[in-house]
Image (cartoon, rainbow, N blue to C red):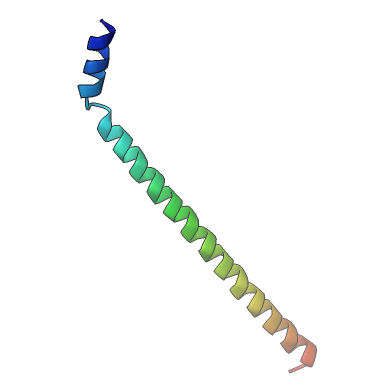
Length: 62
């Protein structure tokens, strides 16, 4: 009985699509997290650069 159960379990492919879609969603999610992290660092750097530029303009009186 257990042997038939494991043979049937081995041959069934109903859950295969779900696992594949879950792996694709995980890969896309990881790519999005990495992209957003890098983009946020670039935005913070740009904001700091603009803030420093405005501060130097205000300090020099130009």
